[in-house]
Length: 155
Image 1 (cartoon, rainbow, N blue to C red):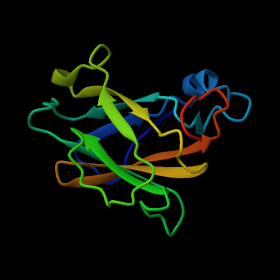
Image 2 (cartoon, rainbow, N blue to C red; image 1 turned 90 degrees about the vertical axis):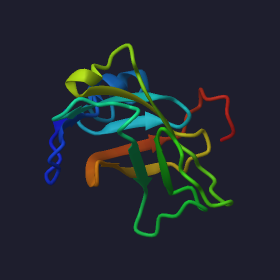
Image 3 (cartoon, rainbow, N blue to C red; image 1 turned 30 degrees about the vertical axis):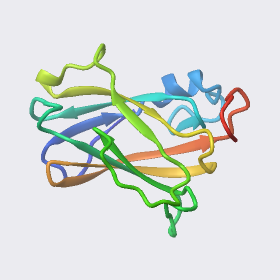
């Protein structure tokens, strides 16, 4: 499912790949429209820009939030980036990660495949995902994070 961020002039589209990713996360029977993933297990998404992407010149800053009172100390909010130069509060408990999948990205064409990993200890629930890039902030969509019985990390 491709979404088009409404107010961005540089992001042309985002594909969270719910049908494909839900199968990999054993959640395909729950939905094929909403991305449903598991704690501690990576997922991919595609972001298309209207300009070439240069990692040395362009940083990507993501924010995931759950609920109206989201905060880093409770793990219901995380700010992370590519590169991840974010300074977090000492009490931040749930740190997400993102990297560019260079094998499947075409930065010279503005097409990036990103690998995101929610931590094994992230609270379970529905999150909103936002991206700040080139002075713009865009809503990339929603995802549901579930418990992961196959994850070895701290749950």
